[in-house]
Amino acid sequence: MFFYKVIGSFFEIPGIFVLLCILMFIYYLKKEKKIRKFLLFITLIIYIISSGWFSKIFIPILENQYSPFIFEGKSFENEKGLIVILGGGVISNTPNNNLGELSDSSMQRVYNGYLMYKNLNFPIIVTGGTLDKTDNIPEAFKMKEVLLKMGVKPSDVYLETSARNTYENAKFTSEIAKKLNKEKIYLVTSAIHMKRSYEIFKKYINKNTKLIPVPVNYLVSRTSINWYDFLPKIDSLKATSYAFHELLGILFEKIFS
Image 1 (cartoon, one colour):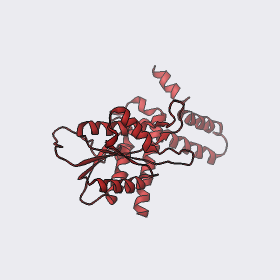
Image 2 (image 1 turned 90 degrees about the horizontal axis):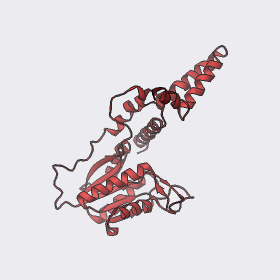
Image 3 (image 1 turned 120 degrees about the vertical axis):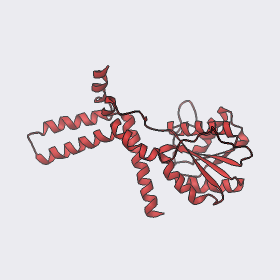
Image 4 (image 1 turned 135 degrees about the vertical axis):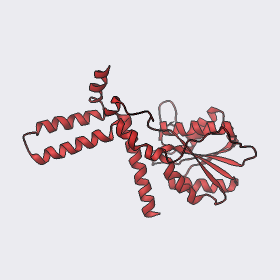
């Protein structure tokens, strides 16, 4: 099993790219020195960003910005609250559903938003529009469809169907929230996305409204690093790419806000 996992990891994406770079490095071992250095550099970069040990160190920097939301020991009686669930992507026009299917990230957000609803009985805003011209069904419709199947009352779900990014999520959702006149907004999104989302939402919501982060959909385990984490894996590469996306978003916000 050990050797199967080690060898197999280098014949799957992204490990196969590391293997190809190593083979090319060996091929050019006695040839151009600059090519060898370049291949070695590329090999190391691909290996590092696709390794579990790196993602376990790197990802929590973003995911640990806010603590998980805990219900125990808190009273929500007579509280005027609102649950906001941010869309996290869809797969359009799947064979089994004309509306398409929610991505893993979106599904985690919707499910945890549903758990908030079951515990708090607050209304929900789902936010997400169409991301491109080929998809004419807003993401929020697909999120609502899942919530209704879970048992949420149709009258408790509000749709925001125009947003194409986090800025528009915050802007358009805050307009709905102001009309509902709620004291608290429980913001549900992936833990890696929470820092950027929280800071943007704070700019748009009413100053008298308290914003409460509800981070979900954690991408990496908090277990200690083991031998398996030194193998290149597609899940680690995906997690690292999400983290870089968020860091770029935070950087652009600081530059252009």
